[in-house]
Length: 208
Image (cartoon, rainbow, N blue to C red; front, side, top):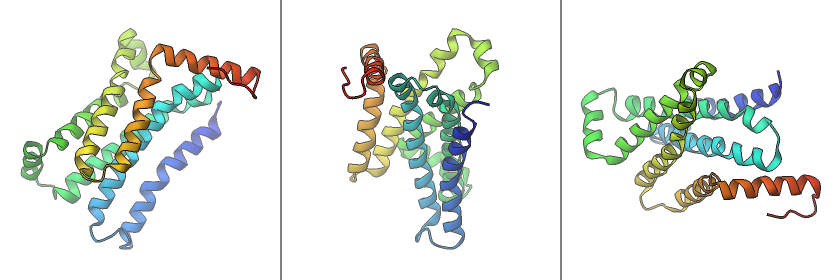
């Protein structure tokens, strides 16, 4: 199988953080509120994985290396895994498995609704991230998976509401996300392809 070692590398890199956080939690090294810390870490990890997933196409356009696309689906599924664990952690550690508290948060805290919408969007993408769905949906599959851009905006809005006053870190992720979205415009995508071609033909001079 092509790119097998890259896929193994992605698996190890993506699975290591949750296992490490769980280890810290079990040994009381995750701070005074380990449940909330774990939920926050998983949410941030999901956003980072979403940004990395969206970076695969521009990297492929720039380098023409197929490995970026080969691991894109795997990264997307890991992003969904993190989001699912983030949601389960919220229900377990913050809401205490109480449905009334979950419903109250949905009513009183808009960022919970935004996060839930992002989760539902990622769920739709994860369920259809297979060859059967590609064949069954045809052209509609690409249209469906363009939801990822809206999901990114929802994720950034969710984080903005959570961090509130501490905007420095959020701004960094927002700028990266904005740049990745801009790269989807045809003029920028073509510029990346030209830059990649120029880089391969003349590494010392890259013309965009």
